[in-house]
Image (cartoon, rainbow, N blue to C red; front, top):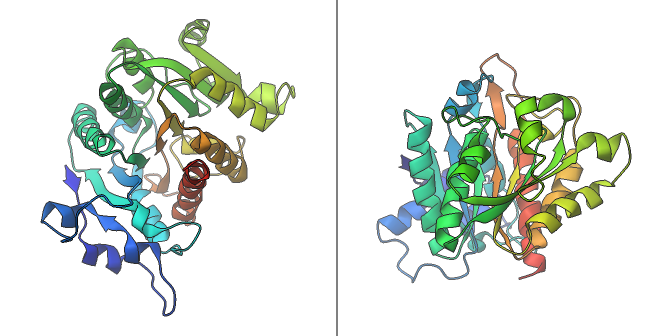
Length: 322
């Protein structure tokens, strides 16, 4: 189910300061819209819709480490506390709410697909935070149904998440999207060679559908710079609407189910999202798998701030071409 927020709830999460205007003081709230507030005509100036997901069913089904404290609320508190100024204005955002409390991965599929379809139908760009990478599937489905055709995707991730269609989980969201013809071309940037199985490697031989840019080719062999690697993926998916996915376990030392000491830096992640955001075909941003605390007790206090940097990098890319 979707838990929406009222303006008062958003203000209670916003760190304010006299003489300053924060994002949370000017952002739109979908909860108020549903009750007929505000009185003025909705939609003026809104470009981006924030949607949270709090679930780890897909992660657990994929034999991953579950989540004790989700990333959505730390992100939201941090984001709402940012300055609303010439560089980033709160009035361009709608807080849709957070999807949580459902019993199955398939129930999340249905709910997230419907809400994302609603966002896209209004001409807003979805920015989706949290949950497992299983939720790429309903986002791709919604984008495809809205476009009326198969769409593309670029995923920055150590894992291709192309496991067999053996029941929905965080390791096969893209497999299901391709099988059901929602996803056409799929580019993966920063894949790790030791973390993708033979089944996946065999699928990647279909170069009409898949483009893999390996971490080892970027950082060990030097075949590409990081910028060139992202461009390789972008060239493959450009030309029709595409989703932008960045699994938080791609970023070194970032708390997630598959947390890694070796990957890309936070700065490289921000740079990539800025580049991708600049492209007019980039239709949504999805940042899954991050956590504030895992079920094994590991915690990270910077999760929300990192997510805010990633989101604003993508949005500033969009603003470059507005």
